[in-house]
Image (tube, rainbow, N blue to C red):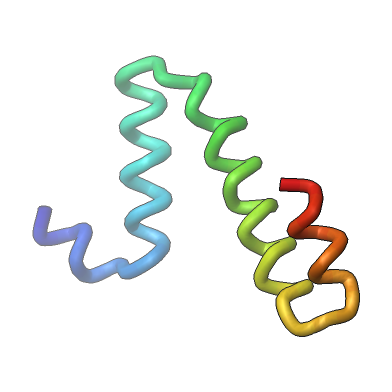
Length: 58
């Protein structure tokens, strides 16, 4: 646990990868990737003219 506090954000992804590998939870991978891509899409289009069209998709 002490090692996790030193690494910051990268240690979170490392722990997630280790959890998925050890527990055989491979189905979590596509869900996490999709959530990250949607988050990036929403953040990048937040101040643009495309925002109403992006939000209409959801």
